[in-house]
Image (cartoon, rainbow, N blue to C red; front, side, top):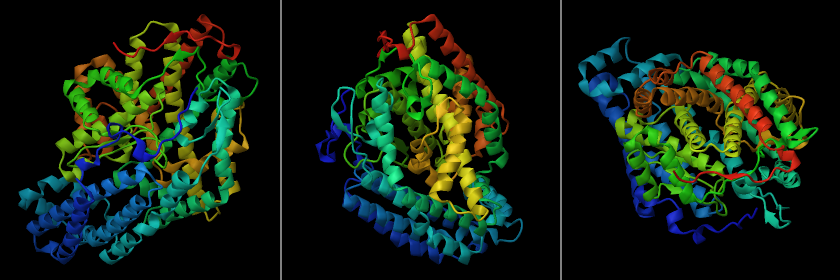
Length: 620
């Protein structure tokens, strides 16, 4: 298993990087856009106190606010994407910090708008909507604002809270810089005995190694860095949690969890349903863990044994070009126009493909209204990278179709539905690859991969969700979030979720310290609800064909023009009930049974040295 040495950003071919000139041709154009926003902020501020004059004035305010927001979005994206290319580039980091400051200024300049709307006499907003056709586009937004009346404060208080924005972002920014720019993970010996640098990008490759000593070295090596910074990271995370609690209390919410969910009209019962249903279905996970232990021929599993495929080895090396072809082919059920847009995306450099020194880890999609989305990858060449590409394409196409259909006000989709499109794509890719082969070894490999998706997306993210809820409730009760308390809570959850077959080590107990999503409070549970909804949609697409695709495409174009639960209901999924989660986890249980059957009918276990049996199809 050869792992290439990291290249400097300047050494990457242009065709393997995203093209940020689609946003601004150069830094001068970016500076000009910043100047235009700064020029409009006083204009918006001068409109304060005029909304009561009539609906036309309200329309003026909302249009100018949207114009500033759209430009600021492009400014922020340009700086943020540039920084993520190389977090050690001090010029890029400085430019990003400059934009963070501008966004705080903009928040202050617009902070009076909502309080002033809510200060109108009862019935005034409804009358404005009736009298002014130009306000029709803002109906849902204005009605949603009225729903949140008790949590919007006075103009003076809102301005004060907006002015704290840069400080509020500090814990997450500190962690990002520590995690991406300062922390290093040393070197380990690969399967061939070569000393190689351990990075966040190649970590998962090592975790899937057939050599257990390589897996352990990678896991311990990665987490040693977080153990070494446990006090700093605990303090950073505790500061983030306290920030969440501060804003929740100031806005009259009963908890930080309610503050995260109520603005999107998501009942806390949805969170409770997820946790309760997943805990009720833990026996499915425990059976899978037991099967994994048997397949690996181990008396006790360690956490670094949870990622290696437990089936006979298949050849799953993919070039990026092969990955692109696979994604285009397997997403064909979503329509010719979907495929056409996606082909254009790949040809137009929407994607930043390979890891380089200083590049942000992981993968994401960043939508830019009026331009197009951008996708960050750290391509290594595994099947998992193909699924990651399909995942990010889901985000990107959701952004593309929402932006193409909705006005700026509703172009962005909420966090609650953010994971649906990405996970639908992964499920469609899995289904297509399974249908393309009758080779038992490949079937086993794909079933194992699907199980890992369910495990990591529903079970693991719900574990994270329970940890987040515990951390916030612990702090809300006045208790300190010390490194020991955080690690003990995380350890207890790991033991409950994974059962007695897996040893909860010191290195596993510190895993909470490396999860960047924890700095975006109560985000992770939506991975689990999103996959549950996606599983239901993918099944409908498989069973119904065109009618389900039509409903789904309407969902992709909906942005935030309706509440998230309503958008999903229109697509055929009711996430206000536990049913989609139950169905998804029962599917997981069925896949466990299927893998057990396939393994019983096939060759000896991986732990006994199964040979490589087959190759995955790379083209139809």
